[in-house]
Amino acid sequence: MPDLVSVRNLVKRFPLGGGLVLTAVNDVSFSIGRGETLGLVGESGSGKTTVGRCLLRLIEPTAGEILYEADSIAHLTQRAFRSYRPKMQAVFQDPYESLDPRLTVGDTILESIALWDRSGNRRQQRDKLLHLAELVRLRPEQLNLYPRELSGGQQQRVGIARALATDPQFIVLDEPTSSLDPLARAEIIELLIQLQKELGLSYLFISHDLMTVRYIAQRVAVMYLGHVVELGETRSVFTAPRHPYTQALLSAVLLADPAARGKIKLLQGEIPSPVNLPPICPFASRCPVAVERCRAEMPPLLEVASRHQVACFRSHERQGAFVDWFELAEAGRNGGQGTTQPAEAGTPGAG
Ligand SMILES: Nc1ncnc2c1ncn2[C@@H]1O[C@H](COP(=O)(O)OP(=O)(O)OP(=O)(O)O)[C@@H](O)[C@H]1O
Ligand SMILES: [Mg+2]
Image (cartoon, rainbow, N blue to C red; front, side, top):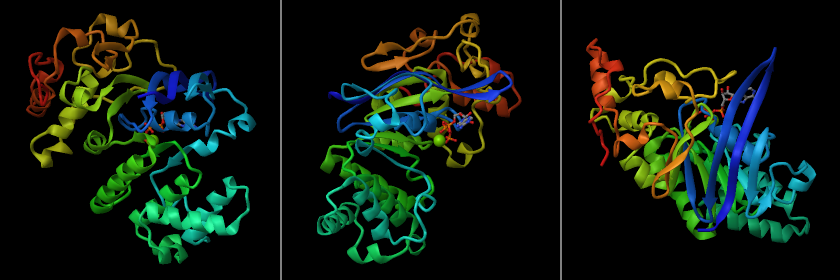
């Protein structure tokens, strides 16, 4: 699959004043092929949205390269970037917030169409509106409604239609279903998959919901504290996660007892602050298998298997998971010492 969008060594820092610098994205590299979905997962604050916003030049990257096909776009002036804008779109989490309550759904979508279609041909724009409505499965009469008259799922269809109005090739989907109920969520995911097939779209799919990512994404990148710590084909990352952080995230989801999922906290301690971070493994402070080297150096993202990269000094030591997070959690719950003593042979849900 030839790459449509790539980022190389992307960095985004936010100066906070007083000499403090928050590094939201730290040396991130990945690529997305034509017609491909890359899932981007990680805890809140790990930098997922910042990556998406940098890619679309909604905020300015501090350093690094962004390629659209072969074109370098990270440091173009906003004026020069304008010709790329219609090709790269976004759909955000809260559809209602991103819609103008004073405009009907039809006028909202028409506005986007007219912004990029300078022909001024009303008839042509109206035809395009009807075509987009059909694509996102909105009925023509729903175009006369106002956003508040629609369900959350229908509002998100409007958000998707508006993104499609410029004939994009690439869409950043930032938690596009997390504000929806389960039925609407499933419908929107199916719609996104269908649209991808019909239009050959590439997606960066940002989500907390690992099971949805497993369903929709061909490859997945796991972020922690601004770093991509694991990147690979979805099947490979989900069945044989190599980074202790990915293993923890997956263990939490795979926990047999659904009631226990929310209660058991596998990761001990808090995520460190992303302000003035030292150049060491970002996960070292919470990692049960960290060694001295992890607290002294930054592990590079290296290929450990075919199309599967991991940033962990210890990932080569075991095939599959080498932290039994279930056992650690159990030991922690029972007040045992287990939270600091990893069971190295455990392979929860890993093959
Ligand atoms: N404009 C800003 N100024 C300062 N810090 C920011 C700014 N935007 C984001 N951050 C910080 O950057 C880090 C990454 O934030 P980001 O929103 O990208 O995370 P996220 O992975 O999308 O989280 P969530 O899952 O909660 O959406 C956080 O520490 C956040 O507080
Ligand atoms: Mg976010």
